[in-house]
Length: 231
Image 1 (cartoon, rainbow, N blue to C red):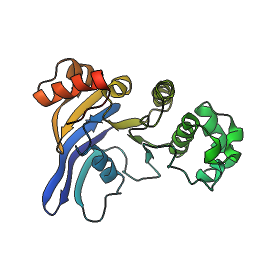
Image 2 (tube, rainbow, N blue to C red):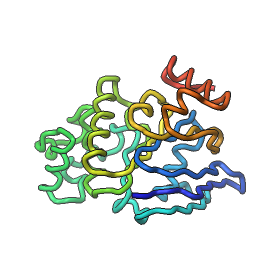
Image 3 (cartoon, rainbow, N blue to C red):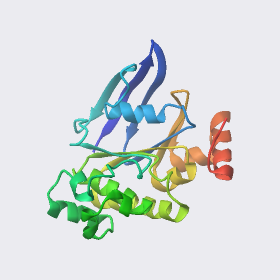
């Protein structure tokens, strides 16, 4: 399955905020500090950019980029992603039978379908969101720092779950994060962003072990020491 972004440009008043290209062969991570353009890139792929921004997107893909049909999204904060007044079952667009299967797929009891989001833990909520995202059988799964709001143990269980599901189902993954340790666990390839440009990219272990730019080297060293990069 092929998905290549040949051109992605995001402009604000004719100033380029993002100007990148990349190819997702299996699991791909965009790494960068806050404001580097990684989340904007996701929004452009989802057609969710603010109206004050314009974008040019050209892709070479085996499937159409249609949110809710071929593309699903897992957001950063599971505590704000679902309506608190809506039962879990009503967040699915599938039948109850299919929703139960999706919950079982992420190792949750299907009785949770009849609860409200406030009755679930953060880890349970993130698994529910992943189940909802996978219920449409996507070709491409976009993840916006989906482990940021979780404790370390829950974070690792979510990472292991995503890796297992990707092998079982066969979707492509685009993962954006500032957490290099998480990216190392989940992605095969990586691109390092700064000010909307890719500084370097390639096999994730090669890039992390042998960064070619001063910025990438400092980002990697800072992240492994502090788990977050700040300038």
